[in-house]
Image 1 (tube, rainbow, N blue to C red):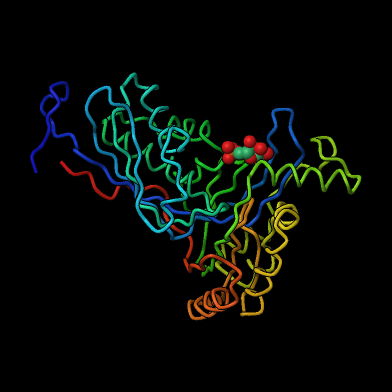
Image 2: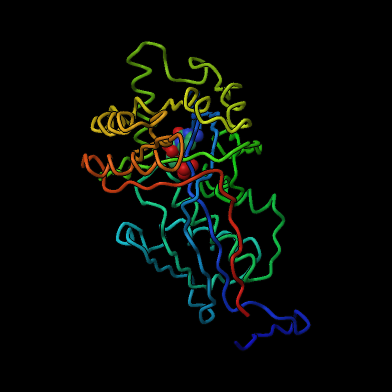
Amino acid sequence: TGARRRPEDGGGNVPMSVTVRVPAKVNVQLAVGGLRPDGFHDLANVFLAVGLYDEITVTPTAPTEGPRVTCSGPDTHHVPLDRSNLALRAVDALALRHGISPDVHVHIDKDIPVAGGMAGGSADAAGALLACDTLWGTRTPREELLDICAELGSDVPFSLVGGAALGRGRGEVLTPLEVGGTFHWVFAVADGGLSTPAVYRECDRLRERRGTGSGVDDVPAPEASPVLLAALRSGDARLLAANLSNDLQPAAVSLLPSLDETLAVGREAGALAALVSGSGPTCAFLAEDPASASDIAVALRDADVCRDARTATSPAPGATVLRAAV
Ligand code: C5P
């Protein structure tokens, strides 16, 4: 392939296209604090990256054409291809930071189910950011990339770092966590969607109805569970299963009561534990081993309680440059 040269690089090769791979996530603990004055909730959010990946490829377009996005994969028709696509907003944010014109074609090869709760949109944003930083040779320091991620959405910084991490603040302030083994998961991809803000609002409404209040002064500060963190460190699936928790689950089930049945089907099929992933509606099932995971996936598909069931393992690495073609 012919190398394009940039005079300001002293003739060094610059890539013609860059491909980045980014994982999905599951929340093994999501502790939700009170509603803050800025409309967000303080969280103790334990993220675990899972091995379902989107691949994001960026290619330069003609100057001043501006960014555009295309998508391939089974869920393509669920992906917005206008400026509301988080990947395009990531490209714009990085270009603005460096005073560059954002003339790129972003292609998303999508394998992360578009259903909510697996951070697929956040993955694409983190992937587009790393891909453009590599394509443009802008070498943005890691801390600055993480700042841009946080501006784009609460889950985007984790998509960049992957592995496992505790997210504090609204989920964007990350501390990496140790994981001592491989965990086997099944994900039930729901038919209908759930809007993240609506699920948080429902969580507040349920708290108000209980009479406990939903503000920062009413709800105890969210804390990561020490036993859960120990379970991750040890790689013990049974210990992890016994300590999974999601404060948004009652709200997600209240808005989409059929999730209860989905969770029950997975449990009956042998899952060590079942929970709603993040704000849902995707449901996550922790399995003992790969054979049990396939059994659970088959049972979920047979019971007709979801659009699809996918197996995957964790942890998985964060956004990674796969190819830089020159
Ligand atoms: O940050 P992100 O764009 O993903 O957040 C989407 C919405 O989810 C927010 O507008 C807010 O309603 C809700 N949210 C929240 N507390 C958080 C994260 C998200 O209330 N920590």
